[in-house]
Image (cartoon, rainbow, N blue to C red):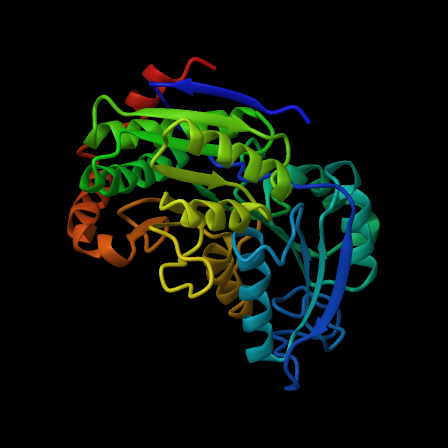
Length: 361
């Protein structure tokens, strides 16, 4: 196993490609609810949500990660299943998709009469090549977190301003670290890709807004879901004196959090609110789950108003998410975090300039 470890004192931020995933694949077809399909138009389709007019609304979901990871990837499917159950729709989920197989899996969903195909992360952006294939004619498409995805007329997408998001997360972490007298944090991610390095930089920038001399230990295990590698990385960081760890991971998140908890190390979630989690408690919830964005898109889809060709950017301090929540003993620090989010939303802090100055590529 090869793990790269390095310590850095300066950081910057990037737009989220978020969490790549492993190879392989699994699929499930889950009929949601037993009510009648809510079709806005029939006879030839053309309207949402029953775009093909077959009397059944089918949502196809594609994910590069494990949709049972208790976090980022799972939130996407959970929101779809909940929404579908309330409306008598059907959900077909394919996860752990190798990016090289994205287009083929998308074509399979088209053949299964999907009305909307939702792609959970931009690692699968090549699946969008299927949008112009005859077998997918008339299908609606949704892309989450389209980092590096050029908008076309064939799909809708949601994006974040990740320099803002990760800076905001780092600021909350800094508040908790200052409370505990901690000056060294750890960051563990999978492949050492541009987005994961940028996220580390932005995260540290936020911490240093509170603790100027703070440092960040970075470890890239090469795999977002390998718990053994992630725990080894966390143990190495703990041995080097970190007091907070941010597992910017997928399926390996809880393994790191559990080890950190056993050693009284503070933790941060990668995307979901787990402040009340009874099994794996976290110190800070960094909330940017794709499920939150997808829920809004599904509401528009139901109302025949999800626009293909349109990008929606979700902004800290302007939208309900992305957001950050301090948990448990740190809840009293929430007003300070809220004030920072308001400043970010109002443009009082030029985070992009800070990031551009810090990130060296």
